[in-house]
Image (cartoon, rainbow, N blue to C red; front, side):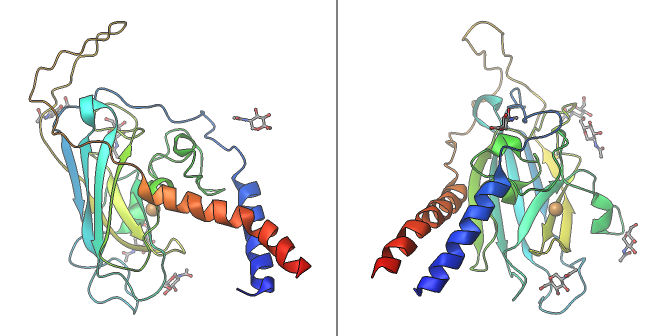
Length: 249
Ligand SMILES: *[C@@H]1O[C@H](CO)[C@@H](O)[C@H](O)[C@H]1NC(C)=O
Ligand SMILES: *[C@@H]1O[C@H](CO)[C@@H](O)[C@H](O)[C@H]1NC(C)=O
Ligand SMILES: *[C@@H]1O[C@H](CO)[C@@H](O)[C@H](O)[C@H]1NC(C)=O
Ligand SMILES: *[C@@H]1O[C@H](CO)[C@@H](O)[C@H](O)[C@H]1NC(C)=O
Ligand SMILES: *[C@@H]1O[C@H](CO)[C@@H](O)[C@H](O)[C@H]1NC(C)=O
Ligand SMILES: [Cu+2]
């Protein structure tokens, strides 16, 4: 790599670290959700037809977000898969949006991201502090969609809910898939299945009484995409050292 490239990379690294600061929502950091109904599932599947009517799209992006109550009802386990990605305009981003998609399929009507703590979109979510991000910013917290396909990801998010009545509940909301520039390509409503049975959490005691079948033994999956992004940040952070060393040669 040329020295000039390394120096410009290190400049980007420094400015993105500064921009991330320690932002959080006006109402603070997102709370960890407990008491999600065991076995409850919400699935959003992108429709046949795209909302975006531009070139560079062969039909619509295909894919879904499958969300299940986490182990013991804590947080949500997500399984994400997308394919038939546009030829350009990535990396793609996806979010839980606050309103559902209306009958006419207009993705603009889904409004903004699920953001109960009033954080806003800028500066960008720091995946090292997911509690400080908008709850609905799944790609911000767990990784954007690069163009290699199919894209699949599994992650555990502690801050979203399948318990009706919670502000963080998204079973009545929607998924939106965007270009990197935020233009909305496609959107879908979540379809909920499974019971409302909640594991009782007797406060102050460590015991949990299970009243329904035990949660499937899906372990909480490490957040590999966020880890990868973190490595990029770390690599950028050492770039000035490398540049300084090369300057001596
Ligand atoms: C953000 O950082 C500043 C300076 O380090 C500190 O004074 C402030 O309390 C921090 N805010 C939060 C919400 O952590
Ligand atoms: C967003 O990106 C897409 C794909 O590159 C492009 O076609 C579209 O014109 C862009 N929209 C805006 C508002 O820049
Ligand atoms: C979608 O809704 C927005 C806001 O109501 C409107 O401006 C836009 O024209 C609609 N788009 C389509 C394709 O109907
Ligand atoms: C979705 O459900 C939550 C919790 O029950 C509620 O606060 C919110 O207003 C609902 N949103 C929509 C768009 O129906
Ligand atoms: C879950 O609870 C909500 C609100 O009480 C109710 O509308 C819904 O029908 C329940 N679903 C099931 C499967 O029992
Ligand atoms: Cu979005």
